[in-house]
Length: 253
Image (cartoon, rainbow, N blue to C red):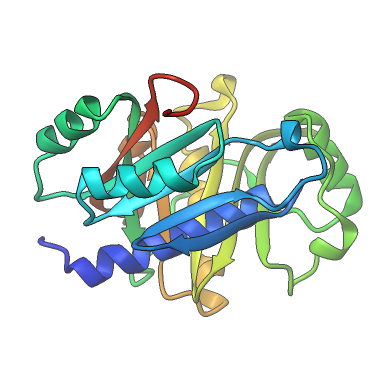
């Protein structure tokens, strides 16, 4: 089905705000507009060497125009994500950015779930939302990050972290973040020893039902080629592709 340009722009809006909120857990990661482009980057830091890579998001803007804006405003260490609608060929975009001195890092599918019909697969594992300090500490140890803060474990938190548990072990996880009236799905992962058992579907089902109950209009995510096999089974519709480019040098001169 052909997607309206406004639908893709709305999904990009969710992507930008959800992704930035996710990265803000460790240090504020801000989303802003620079002309027709979206920019996601660290807030001002005392030491410029601490800046993480930033990401520019482009939709329906010609490559030369996008490149001119990025060259004027980018810090070092950036990537450009170009959103291409399903019905549009990506060959011309690849060629245009290559001619401008960029290399293609990877491609990802861009998906939307309208939250109208959500599958309820058979229970194959215990799936729960992380709402205790003990479970947050256990997950933090696994992913090697600080545990979710206590004040972000309640029902009013702007994101919801889910885990699949087998005995005492966390064997899968996924996160949903509130973003401009919708939700951004992030960090879906199932341990290799527990894949192909339906755990990913169980995690997604729990998350999507909660998204809808909280009033989300739809869920948006970006998927690798492997993940792209799961999400349509859960009701996600692929609306486009992210082509992610980086300059051949660290920063264009």
